[in-house]
Image (cartoon, rainbow, N blue to C red; front, side, top):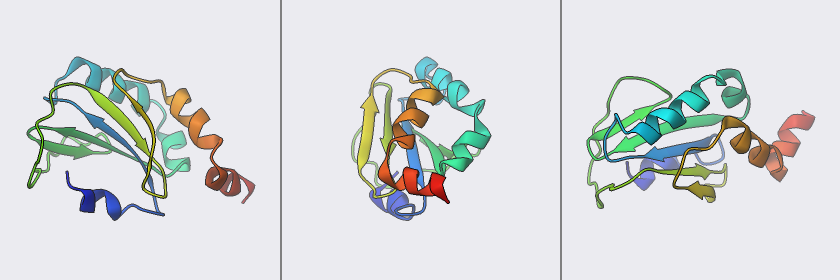
Length: 118
């Protein structure tokens, strides 16, 4: 995935970017499972889920694999990032996180506070 792919979401969506060398990475599969059981909460918080590997990427739990163009670095291990509406990284980890951990962090953000008031 390239920065342009993420820029199209700025001010529209938050992103959880899961990186792993392969699609069948144990940590990535665990992370996807932890998130997939919370589809309504993900949608409510305007979250898009990308799983990025050395072979391409998927979006929002789809099995359709999109090729990554101009991949600059090889992914050697699991990593996860939360990217806010402003396009900056809000959290990063090298092990899976619960959906609640993401939601609690997002719900403390000023823009999310405003969304909840509406």
